Image 1: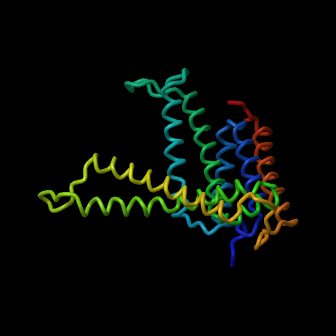
Image 2 (image 1 turned 120 degrees about the vertical axis):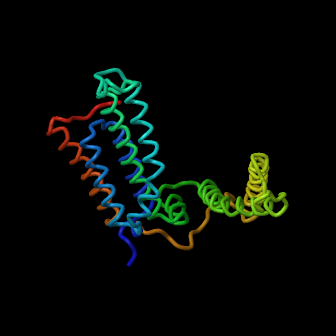
Image 3 (image 1 turned 180 degrees about the vertical axis):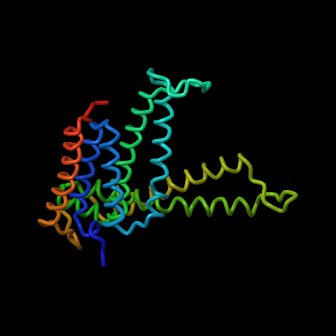
Length: 254
């Protein structure tokens, strides 16, 4: 059975993601952000195809960024020292703010991962054209750019494999490419990307992109269930924030 979030309208999901991400920027209480993070994780695991392992792997960049926020704030903000015996000054105020900022990142990251995992690119572009009145010129260009990005890893592997065939062998029998080979492969990938982008642009132009009104083969539905999704998510966010205010934690600008 198709997961619940995959059956919902991409434009509605994108709007909900934008509103929740924007509202999260005004929340600085760690407890409230921790609850929002827990809710986002539960929603990601129950309404998408994500498994705990895949969700953990996808969230590693956000976790690394959050750890950096905690470190920078703990070491740079003034306040009461937590560990006086350490050679560096770590303050409780810096830790609190760093944890809050890291949890902000986690909340937005979990919501973004759920959106990406449950939204096919073609459906998103079609829905934006159909419901958000996005110009087909921009929609198809974005879709083509996304497809090009998907091909870059395989192009990189092909370039590196071709370099390995021509590279001299070391004493261990492995090809010696070195930093120069990495730079050469990066430049080759740039050239391949530019040529691919030019071919895509010519193909879109030859098919009359932007020449006039266009029809859509598979329409993306939009009904009351999508409105219910938006209402449930926004209500849960508002109730969680209100509970934080009632508990005395409050909202704060940062």
